[in-house]
Image 1 (cartoon, each protein chain N blue to C red):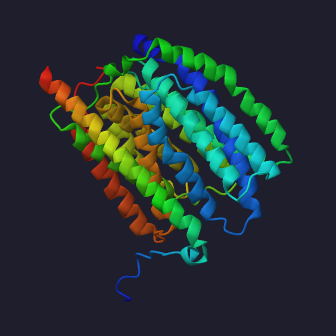
Image 2: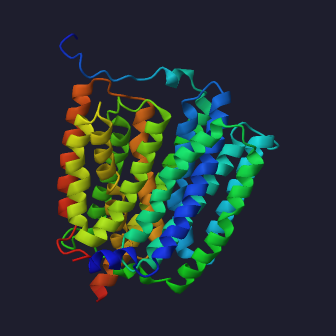
Image 3: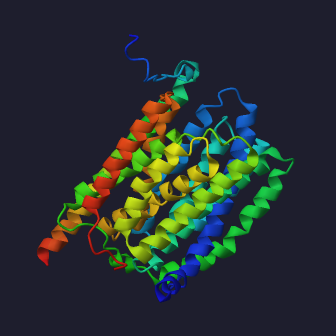
Length: 355
Length: 55
């Protein structure tokens, strides 16, 4: 009980909640605009690809800049870009069809990096903080998608965006206080070369990114079911970090990569079984982020950027290739999960931070 | 061909439908970002290793 209390009320845990809100609002704004823009244009499929590419890929570069120049207020820059992007998508005063969308995506990327920097630096080697921050995105995506279909003005979204500023300002104070505390991240197996750990951790992210789209979910048909799915995803992401701090990263890696698989496959037509699998599946994020930060201790922004790049690389094939046969899909998910689980057991040290 | 009906990889006709110029710009910029990131990570790891050796 004491351990649970220690994790749930860990030092600076409020930073996770501050950026949970910021992340949620960011995704609400982005998916609100995306669902409006996509609804009006013929090449629907290419927009998510452009969005993913522009929002995920630059995060590594922005992260590296933020690591090197910590005084740059990337959270505030992100908010300004995001709101400017929403306005330009609404009024269309900038040249080019994609300009507003590009600005919006860059705002999204800046805010993600700001959240990662603050939560990783303030957590003193714990994963709950960053996991709580990341989980906000899932709630934001579904809320944004729903709001996009309702007759709500873009200007209300801008006001919603402005509410992030006090949260970001407060978060920046925590970052100033904890500028060099990523040294407490020691989850990696020190017998393996750091370069190899980075490559293997990114491979896990790529594979999981691809699998995320391949999960069979015939049950997911109504709006309520979709809302439930996204909420469970968010819950899983947060639990990944909390459980890593509680029971250790190795156990969470097995839970998320191996135990999730049968639930995901059997749960094709059974919502509750599938949701259990989705929850476990979503826990991987904390594992890979913790590993990459352990190797790149002085560059948490770059480490976070690597996970988003991996995620993008994993989702790219989905836009071009898709395996339609259920059996082959299930076999592939199982095999990839086993491989990822073995890799993570090799690269995670036996006694991690929590033990 | 009938022996391998299970894997139905659909190379989407979307590629043909898409406007090739933005797609090309997108791909090239992503490759550049990827190369920069790899270099940054390599440099950082090298620094870390050198630091450990000094200790």
